[in-house]
Image 1 (cartoon, helix red, strand yellow):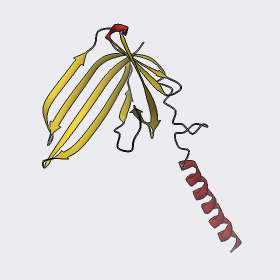
Image 2: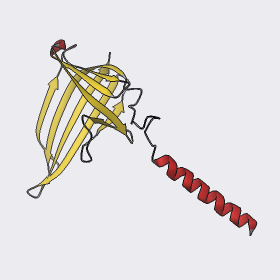
Image 3: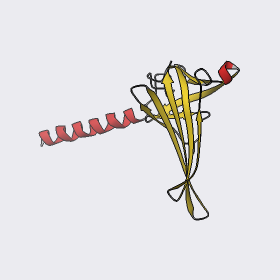
Image 4: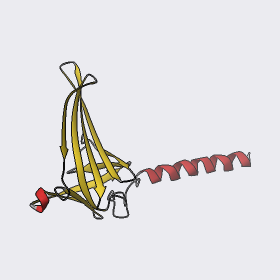
Length: 150
């Protein structure tokens, strides 16, 4: 009987401990969602490809290939993305955060689509997919950004 009570107590303790850790998942001590340390630094944007599919068939593809120095992304440790365009002539700063391994760029809201990150031997691929049902058709828009570390 005592062994059973101890076992039950341990199970409840582990369950309570696990639940308490869920609230702080992906957050640092300030309550913010820090970005993956592998992102921090400056990246050269090599290309950006936008693809639209209707019911699984590709209907449109738009691919931009950038020259060296034309467009860069710089991720800061304090959760900002500095996008430099036009060989340094234009700069935009946006907030970024990570939740459950996904990257959110810009102001966060509950319906915002995140980027999935894939680190490669030469850089990083960021993919964002948005799916909507319109007039009985499934429309999928995908954005693929290929980056190389500077």
